Length: 245
Image 1 (spheres, rainbow, N blue to C red):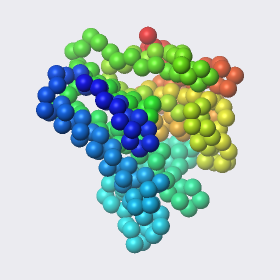
Image 2 (cartoon, helix red, strand yellow):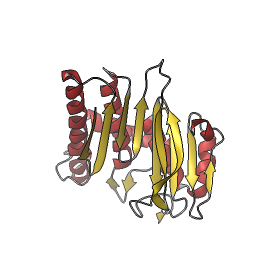
Image 3 (cartoon, rainbow, N blue to C red):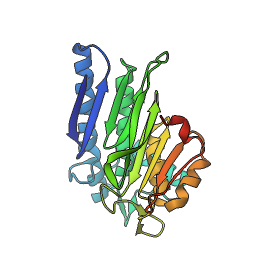
Image 4 (cartoon, rainbow, N blue to C red):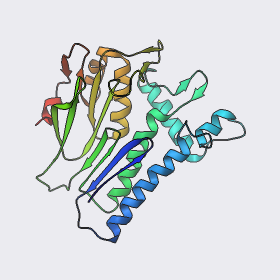
């Protein structure tokens, strides 16, 4: 069963390979309701969200337990990335760089309560699962940022996460937080990892570093990356090819 809904201003696609029954339909409903709930709570574009009210008056609107968890995770990653991942912009807290992958990670746990053969994609970030004894894998295409209808690499993955950062679809939305400049090179950076939060945040931070970001990722355990620069040249970490079909 496969469904796609527009939530958080992006398409969310869930496919679960299982015979249709009441529990399967309930799981789909639960997952999509969860994303709607996260959007209502943590969208910086909704004036009634927790994060908007917190920014308006952090003394009056104290963060909930869930918001505290999100903010603490963001600050942990700020330290891990030497400041290349940040959520403080001119005194405004915007954790949306983490909220999407945080939501995907929690939704993954919801699905895993009952199923182990599924694919979840949210705005281009993906988690997949296959049974331990499965001989099959999921295939995930890496887009050519210069020709979006072309696939430049096909990733084969049984269990794990894939996240891509880039300014080629949503223009000029990734900045280097250390100098405030829009990153124009590279144009695309795809990261494979076991955790969607790790893959997504590290892809964003490495992208903000510019072309040296892929070398930084090379030194991190459990992550592999594929970078395309503005001159259309590609660079990958040493074990990325192990995931390529």
